[in-house]
Length: 105
Image 1: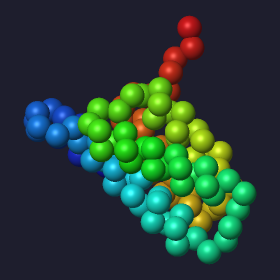
Image 2: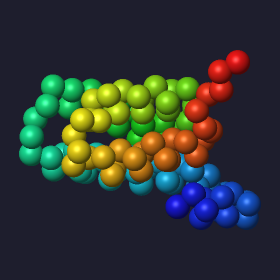
Image 3: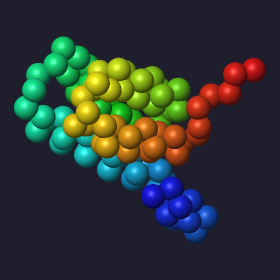
């Protein structure tokens, strides 16, 4: 997945392929979360932050600190639900396309 994104960045397409990756990943996790039959305490937090991630992606170029904050909230909310781990990993990868973890100085 990362390689295809890098290739599209080099070719200079009009749309940022990282945004497409983020929207795809967020959409998958939202669908899987909606279909998950078990309620858990932080489900609402996950749903709200996924909606925020989708809105940021829809707005063009999202702010990296805000993306990371939303990712942390989503991961904290659904991280213990093993059925959602693949979709959560995809969201994490999409967020990382906008810049790796912050370096500590």
